[in-house]
Image 1 (cartoon, one colour):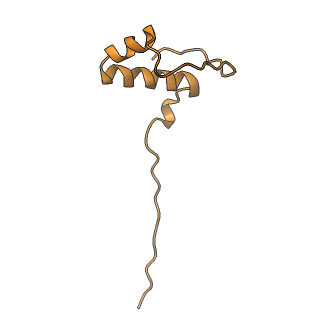
Image 2 (tube, rainbow, N blue to C red; image 1 turned 180 degrees about the vertical axis):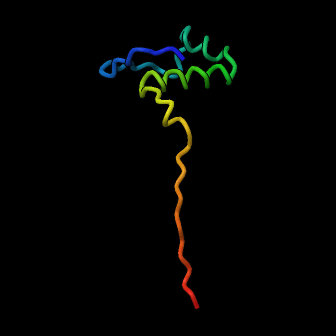
Image 3 (cartoon, rainbow, N blue to C red; image 1 turned 90 degrees about the horizontal axis):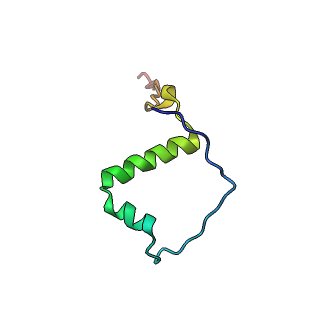
Length: 68
């Protein structure tokens, strides 16, 4: 996977949800799989990607039962 630069977190953009922008039309024309894939790419750009933490964490707990 390509490494991306960190996203500038100090910039905020506010727009109307009812406004029919070109970008909005573009994303509505994509399949749900394509939108989800891009969401994951943006998440990795923002928070980074660490292959060692990509798996689910496993926790082992030993429970002792009373004898008797």
